Length: 390
Image (cartoon, rainbow, N blue to C red; front, side):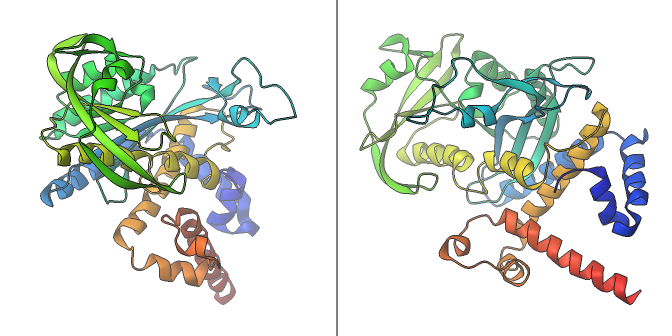
């Protein structure tokens, strides 16, 4: 039901000896002989190995970045709490016709910030590269941009080839471009329409004004799995510069919906686009980040909160919480590895231990929730047999 040490202790030693199991987990989290950095090092080493494998088979590694938050609205005294914007509050206060007026100010609650990075490639199931939790208050105060700085510095020192970092509009700023260029990394950034870009003939304009003269050079039917609809999409591109980095050639890819059901999407990248094939690869790389599970990084946040109980730890101290969340990240990465390495075995296992009827469950692209439930059911039966025989 959650990351409660008393409940987890029951699974370790059996529910009849739950206090003993709880003590073991508490001693593990309080132990001074290891830190959460051990888990980070494990993820980074696995990321290096998988990058080499992807490059060997001719695929471009993608690092998918995003931010979220862990909300603790009823907490007061836990170490490291800071103010975070409540996504739950935003969802619950959406305008519902005939009920009430939406609040004019954003809703903030106690919680922690969360930065996640997944390693993937087109057509591949992702793996965890980094999971970081940080706060803006107290003695553990951290600046969110330092997370990216340390990650890029480690990649430059250990990975010989450049990677493509895929980021959403929350990272659309000059400091993101500055650090990507400084650490010699490629980036694909969804750009905001009111930010300025420089064109050789048209001068300095806002992105949406500059994109008006960008003629579509290719069209394709694409499936929007999030909205469950097929759309006619056109793509065009042009060479631009950022006002603060005039020496660096960038490319703006403009993606339009033929029926104008969605506003145009602007993708800014440091990769050279010389053909229509390159432009579509850029589009698909970004869609892989925000598309259907398991490609989307938002699914990692959702699974961590809803399925793995990352918002439920009841730990006083910051270091112990980081250790427990790191262990849970290992569990999520293990589930992804099953989908990646045992794709033919997973449907059989699900049918045996977590059967579901209906077409929706049969065609689900990522049975991450059912997979965890199936493993839990199998382990529960095995544990019961062992206890009865022993």
